[in-house]
Length: 483
Image 1 (cartoon, helix red, strand yellow):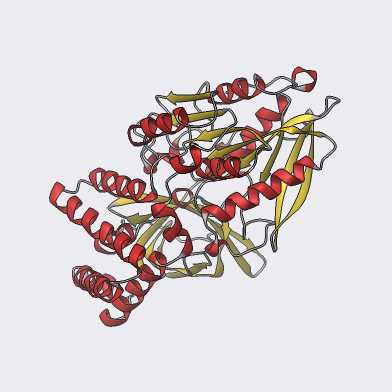
Image 2 (tube, rainbow, N blue to C red):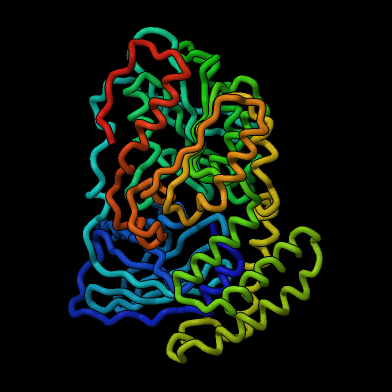
């Protein structure tokens, strides 16, 4: 998740553009590259598709949990290219210079300025192993569910064995996701749904509000709103003839691991919950940990790190008191102006003038801080709902997770569960797993796109074995394909 200080660091730590290559062609196909943020490379893939005289494109940004998002106003007129990404935080505008098989340029979103680069490459999605391709030994159905004033769209997979089946609702993490929680060609929820259903569990996975087939405004959603959507999905499953209404559980990843306990604490109808990298401390602590980790990875000194952490906490104070915004605006404006002045003169030519740049950047940062999701997240303490959970709980952490670190979250999780109403709980750590539960080297964001599009060994079996010991599976399941 993006912090205000991380956004500011993106302005202050722009990287130099890469060297051009030698030939220019049609852009049709995938282009692999990165956005420069916090001195690290945020992997992206832009896939162009030419049809007649028209050109369309999509973008993958796995670290923002955004995959296959359509771009608009796409143009390719070497030496210039332009495309735009409509997104919750605001329109992201990319302007680049084409040099052979390379593109480099700048982007702006809600006033946040960065650089990006692309090189012609092969589609990393072709490296994804085929999962759940027809024919499969279970039924698949596209469904829609009413939740308040919106419609939630999803896929329900149901074992073919006779009887009423136990079911699992999959809950995505922070950011706007499709039903597969797809990230740079990796489709975690599709893989989990396939594996669970082959072992006798019905699975419902849904697009988040404003994504895929779901309606609603994704920028206005909070963690609590997501929990309400999950309870609507629970009610939907209880009305299905193929589902055992007394054996419906929740499985949430990242922020989904916060949403699941909120829903379970509100409804006695939740039979169990599985928390995949679910946090157990307040959001402000998570954000500060992530900021510190990212700055250390970027090679920043302790003095600079502590300054950024103090500034981040200042933002929290303004959000909590809804005061001090004018003073914060002046401080941020000074920092952004300093960063602008430090840019290479050649880069400044393609940007707005200093005053316009500073105003737009700071306006975007303040708007982000005052948004409903950020306000809710920084102070919500998952332990306050974990203690009210009465159903069985399995919590799984990745030993190399840099987003929800086990060192920060395991003890508070165990403490909360020990004080909860359930006597059936387990906390497990998979030592080599990152936040996506891939087998990782360091756990860094920058590894996500390059790792195998599969889970670390034992992850799927751990969840499946734990669930199936607590529910009655009709026919014993269809058998799985392993990790």
